Length: 357
Image (cartoon, rainbow, N blue to C red; front, side):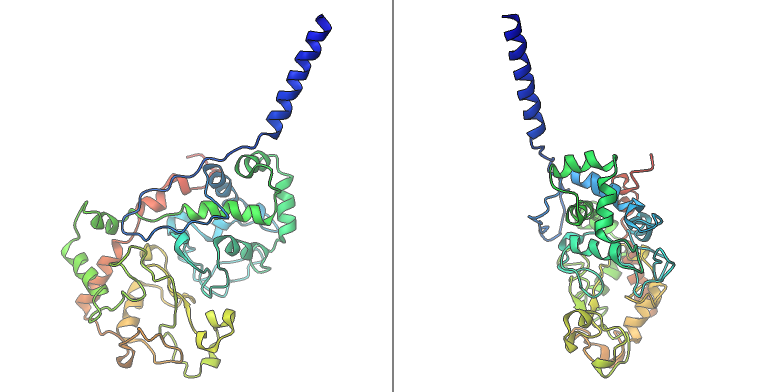
């Protein structure tokens, strides 16, 4: 009778152990903040954002394990204090000291973008992550080796278990984890946002700048950088804004979108960045040619070039720009400063998790 009880107890123990090992963990859905004046956030059904996935992705974003010589991480070129751009550098450096050919874009409000990189070569956040890791001039690590490194890590194994249960650790899952944390990088707490919510008012100079930017007879910025119809500060499309006087579309040194689509009509077109946090992300344009906002505004005021594939929305190109007065330029700068999100660039939820704060 005694032995029978022992066997029964062992059987129950084995059952519960087997049950516990086969039990599928369920990650906690991530709760996004309420966003005012934003379009509805697109959801990626293939990669639902969870608390555990975001935590894992944040560690991977700041970890140099994804570079061939363990010298740089994603965060090396995307700094929180600069809205996850690499300001003030025009071009980022790879592990061999190679300079990139284009300015490093800022990372925030990415869920709304239909394409990534200046030329739109990636159509999802996860696909975007694949590129810099395997690119020889950037992190120079093949994804098979990257996955093997992470598999061998005692630190990451339990975190992947919590976030993705039994899914095999490979490039797809690693990119999903980083993609989840990138989707949480939301900039929505600037003075501009507080004005939209009615929590405060602009100064006279800021209000005048807001009017100029959104008036088609003055700044005429709203077609590409909407700050009235919705709060993204970008139309999320591609444009040729007349940077260079190229009359034959085939002769663009950097074809931009055309280099991806193979269509001549897309040569010289680049992704339109958001005006949000613009003060923090100098230098400007895909090639970092403008160091200051004053230079940018002077270009749109009196420096626009007639060129092949020029965006039809550049309706003042025939006169080299919108011709703003010195006072109007000053007011525009005042407004652009209201788009700086100090809460975003200091939020500990986005900071380096390897450093205790």
